[in-house]
Length: 115
Image (cartoon, helix red, strand yellow):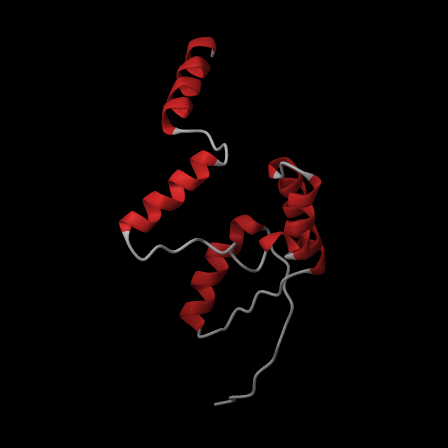
């Protein structure tokens, strides 16, 4: 039995990929997908467009850009030791001018009325 390995590059329609995976598994083949440079550039462009849409200010956008729009990492999420600490942080956000739950409910009602 020949145990020599050969590497090939194969381009197939995305719709046939599941079938190829099934066939390769049955035959003992290994599929390694390589991230194309074009796909990586497209992914970066999409992340930049999304950052532009969600950034409130140019400073917010630049902060996201410094982190490569968080493509490879998740933004740091606040962690609270106790529920009281979390409540205090949310109260501080309200004092800074964030929209309260009541205001969000009111705005949702307005949206459904005019939709």
